Amino acid sequence: MRNGLDSPLKNLRKDLHNVARDAEALLSATADVGGDRVQEVRARAERSLREAMDHLDGARLQRRMRKAARRTDSYIRDHSWGAIGAAAGIGLLIGLLARNR
Image 1: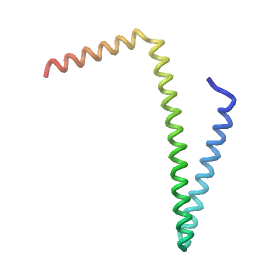
Image 2: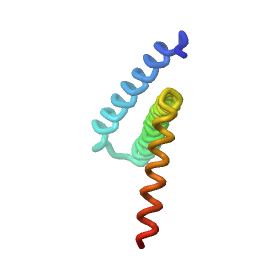
Image 3: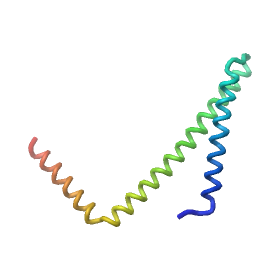
Image 4: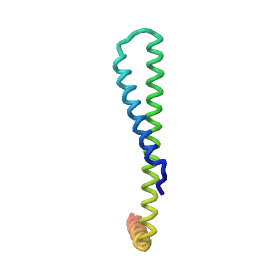
């Protein structure tokens, strides 16, 4: 289910990562610059950068989880009897282990 937005979104994500990397470099380069106002702006920029990176990483994780769920669903549908057999075997094993305690 790919659509025409996949490539532009991938490019946007890449560009945002580049901007974040450049912002980190700028913050590092200005670490020794003094002044209350400068430190306030630096702190705000660091917070914004951290939030943006967390958001980008969270979105990536969500995509990976959805993709894994689709693959699992597809595998179970294609191999339903094997999945049923594996679940029954695991249930039997747990039952035997619980009985021996």
